[in-house]
Amino acid sequence: MRRQYKGSNLERARENRKQWNATRQEGVLWHTFLKNCKVKFSRQFRVGNYILDFYAPSISLAIELDGSQHFEDKGIEYDKIRTDYLNEQGITVIRYSNMDIDRRLKGVLEDIRNTILNMSGIDVFE
Image (cartoon, rainbow, N blue to C red):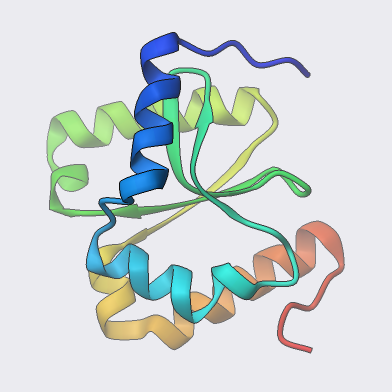
């Protein structure tokens, strides 16, 4: 499936990857797990008009980490529209709050492991 990209979005994704203005929680998830995962993840991956925090193209899985703005009315509405669009593109989206990373990282990693296992049959902890 060919995806359409906006030019400004492409440049923003490149700049984000280069500078990677990551939150502390994104850095923790990337460096403790996703960077060396058996399923390859990319950071700041562009799909349509959106930039995903982490994306595994081989299994069409997006992982999004949400700060407090995502729990306000506008953020909730925006995330629903975004997730619906990504689902229409065949992408599964799983979301965690920054607080999840801070307080229950082990549970988040186990959940990601189970999602990958269910989607691909690959046990990333073996």
